[in-house]
Length: 608
Ligand code: AGP
Image 1 (spheres, rainbow, N blue to C red):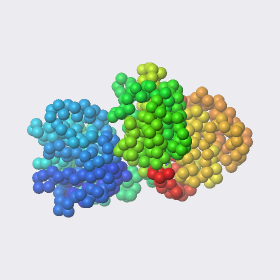
Image 2: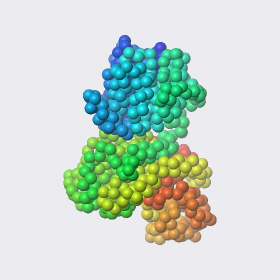
Image 3: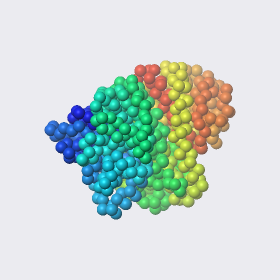
Image 4: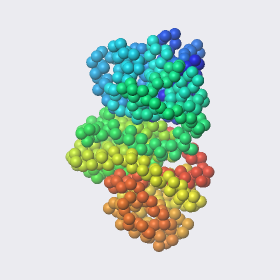
């Protein structure tokens, strides 16, 4: 997820663009750049790293009435100046948010026509497509419109071109873009924060719409050039509210971004033939096919996703899997070698223990893959192969969308390996990937039901001193995750346990003051979990149970009963995680915790 801005008007665009990028840094901050038209010439300034690096690279005398800017969260191509936006070709500069799925074939076709590329990004092909059409005599609007017709995937773009200082073109498909209507000046941005300081009159573009901004006004058309009447919305948000998309906290915003992050992590990897394809994945298939075992390593929430992935890999690929907490792995004498597929799961790509474990495994000869959310992070650079989660920046310390995006990526990996090892046939792959493709919609459904329900539940239990979370099979790690979410943002002591372990100790904890969250989807261990619920209730414990839509067997058997949409049992963790995230958030809110930056915690633990 990146941030784009644009301005056309009588003021100097440069400070407006920089201020706008600063307000979008939460969308991505690994590199930034601007393009502007000055004295009829196109200028571009870009830099890797934080926005301040860009600011110091822009000469004070630069002044222009039209320009575009970009702050990047890399999806293709590591963070560096060459990959920073705007991307330029000839007279054209483009900034882009999204993923162009067919960029490789477009790049190959353009290369055959003599185009030379200077970056690893998907975005650069857009600049070349537009410039080529300008050279063929099209005007800027038509050149952009026709080029967009070549693209497959998601985009929000802004374009300026030498020789056209009086126009800025913007368009969107699948990524947000909002137009600001000022007095003789017009703005475009990925989100409201850069605009609200200048105007509250806005137009929200819809998919496959283009906006042509000039000093006299804004024209909106479809991709065939047909004009579109657009409603002008007067926005009531304050700039601060807008940065979080109107949500009170980044954590809540990120919980709600999960349908999109699951979609972005999965759709571009499910091929039309029903298989799994990882773009730019440099671990040979022979390693995936021939590994004698897999070692999954991570910390915290990422470790929980490894525990679930173990079950998927053993079931779908019949691959023996060991899961270790990174800080434990690195200090024991692990049995790892060239026949081990080592997978480090890390949102930040900078967790010290996870990096150390990966280095240890590589030293022992294993091939290392990382499932990571930050392009160009240390883990991504040191691994032999990377599978990115496309969750966008996760600002809240408590991991939410990164967790379900990790599960999405790991599930795809399990299906891929299962297919390569001849365990998963085409029919099974199509079924499983079909269920995964339905996940974004089911998560949306879950969010729409559960937020209010969890708010009500939070008001009942937010003063509890302890919580117990129980689950079995795929949902035992989700019980661990639910407990971690609660403890790290509400500071309530919470423990996740395998439900079958109750008799081996935890049942001694049960009394009327102990709320017990039980994950009981309709699967082959449901009856066992139902009897655990009985054990808890017969000792006075209060049971908060989560089951799946059509299962009625827990009616009257739990004190509080909630339902998530039905899905194949192995994918219930993605849906079960959502209400637990919301419950933790709502309880923490009632307890007055700093939800986005809880005490004692950092977003990325870069030290031991
Ligand atoms: C989860 O909510 C925590 N923020 C923490 O456990 C986190 O998952 C852990 O530190 C691992 O971080 P990583 O995924 O960036 O490696």
